[in-house]
Length: 63
Image 1 (spheres, rainbow, N blue to C red):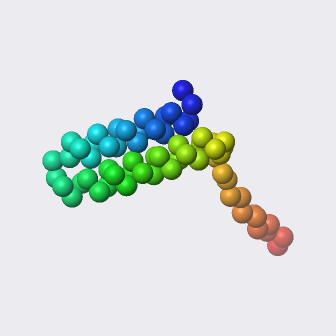
Image 2 (spheres, one colour):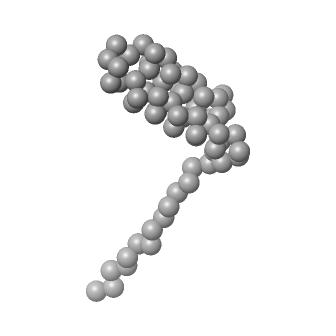
C-alpha cells in the first residue's frame, strides 16, 4: 500500500473516532489529526513522500 493510501486510511480512522467520541471535547483533537493525515497524503501524492531530514553540523572537539 502506498504512503498516500496509508495516510488517507489514517485520516478516515480519525474521522470515525471523532464521530464516535462520547465527549464532545475530544472531537476537535480527532478532526485536527485527520486534517494532518490528509495534508501528509496530499504531500505524498505530489511526490513528496520521502522523509525530510535536517542535519546540523557537528561541532568537532579540537582540544
